[in-house]
Length: 327
Image (cartoon, rainbow, N blue to C red; front, side, top):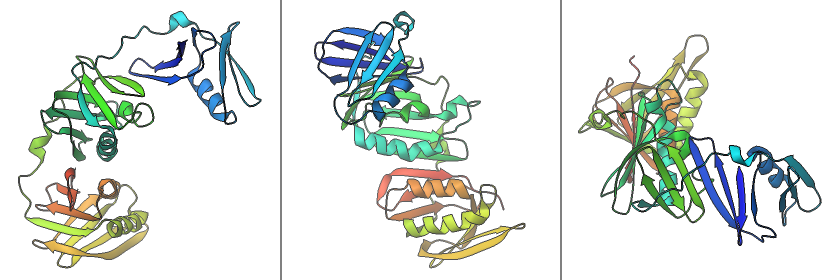
């Protein structure tokens, strides 16, 4: 990381060329200058110092950190080798509620793929057309969509989930600006900025995956359903589906595994529709229910072969579409 001190400010920049974070802090500057130091070692050293003032000095080819007694001496890195980075441009940015954005990202990123062989599916699609900012992620087995209120703006960008996971612990704040360029996206706040390289490629047409209507609806308590899924998952693990028998009075969850045994239980709820049995991957089902931020979860279904949709009973801004497992 590059550390620069001037006036009363310490500016810190870290980058791996795909993601760049800049932040700043008001400090007492004894002598202006700059240095480049190993990021992990500096971070861990400062974290392990006793609470109180920290002194950072660069001299004689070393970066020295001290405070409360301990004194670290780390080898200084060549400043000329640190990449030249342009400043983020927020002149045409869209402003969003930072807390709402982080919450929505936590909900949708569970559906992003971790398979680097399909980079388009490892990102979160940002889309705004002078209305809410929509976030979409999919790994082709499930799809998560969430809308976030935004100040009027237009943008379309496919952003690596890896970079977005750093937002809350770097520049996350109550107000965030989002600026999309031709190759990069920048997030800015009073804490600094995070810049990430956009993913090249076309995100799948997710709208065609969402059925226009659902004839059957199950409504159950979120915590009861999560507990039932957790018990069934003890038997199911990742590769055995959980069967859901939708019927008047709620849903019966069951799982059978020849080499282990099985588990069955009834979760009370309200069901409107024809009786049916539909099955889902246990982990994907658990992820979807856990992502719903509502006391009551609604499962909308068409038939056992078409995707089901999980959503909060009173939280229409988020939905989680899940492909069923053919029985």
